Length: 399
Image 1: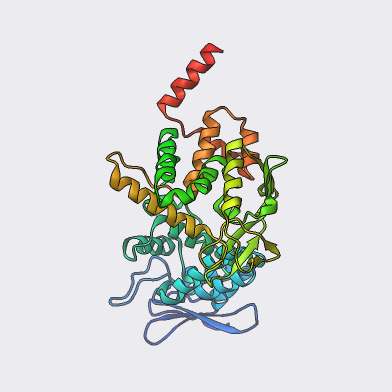
Image 2 (image 1 turned 180 degrees about the vertical axis):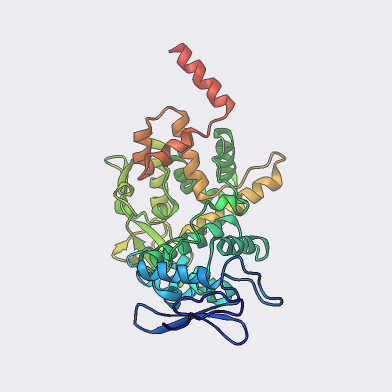
């Protein structure tokens, strides 16, 4: 019977275990592809001390158990040698049929990982603590905001989920509550009050320069249209006879300055929005005052856009964001009581909030807003102040 092999501390070495002359331990095994592989450690057992001057790591037998478990579960060794960047690139390549905005978001994350050392890490080496530390670094060192980091994590988390589904890794390092790791410094886009809305619209209507935008901004405040839906409106979408607005597409401009028409993400986005007499009057003035371009722009088969810029191109979200920014800035230079930031989304949220406070049925409001999930609509009903609660209580008492 052959003598048992032992280490320099007289401990019996198991099959595949060896100790080199420098004292380092080696474990030799055969991977799933039938190739010989080796794992190393300065410690045989987890209770062994780490030699002076050596980096602490898992002991050889801890690594053995990990390797055997991976082989049993068919986990590919070394994460298939994918780096974080390579994994995200593979994940993105499989995402077909996504919107231009989503694809632009993917490109931003890939460009970030190309520059950041984190992108070069092998995926099986990324642990929960590494993922958290990286996101903290993005906020505290790189100065990225909560919303940006939320979007970045929104790409990495499913990419690592894909790696886990493909048996490349055992655990998902990005599966945690983001707000528990970094500070949520994002500014909530609140609705403005009815009084603020009236004062802002009055200011726009009476201003010599900005009055040209009054009808459009009135429509945004009184229809709940998404800005991409609003920009995509054509003559045929305004149905005066039925007093409704047909919403079945959105207009967007890509980072490459290409104009594209997109269908709503869900069926609930396709809808008819009722028009009030005031909204219909705004549309009639917009159509009457529209200067005919030398050539009508056409985007993916759609023509007759209501709002064109000075180059006879359809206006996009950025135009209206800037107009509102300049309007509010001028307002705040004149009046002591300041107007909060107003964006096209604030106009939409204000409409939704006003309808909720007026007692509109949540399902009706969900349809008008084009929300696919009723919880998004119901969330507006939770944004009430004391005055709202007091008025509602009096209304119920008098009923």
